[in-house]
Length: 98
Image (cartoon, rainbow, N blue to C red; front, top):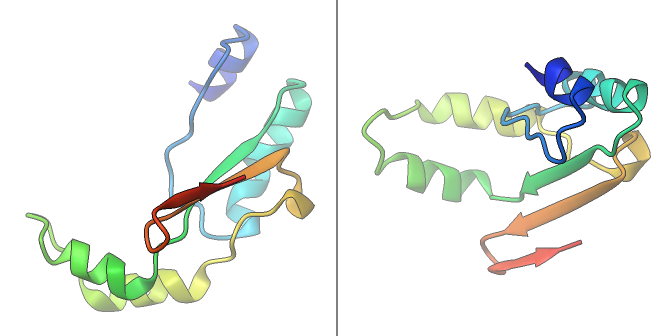
């Protein structure tokens, strides 16, 4: 689906996935390079404890150990890994920083 949207030169295409590590994100950055388009990361900078509190209110609760394991693997996205830009949403500061 992503390749098709890029081939059709759709003005915006979003990949909604966790992609915790540089390795997990690399294929998307490479694909953007192949199709000569921008790759922008949107990062929700949410502390593990806030994730756990929000998770506790959901109908489908993820065990805390899963959140802890994901948080331990997390490498924040950066332009150094190949993104054209990284937008950070931080609920603790309730703001967006470019």
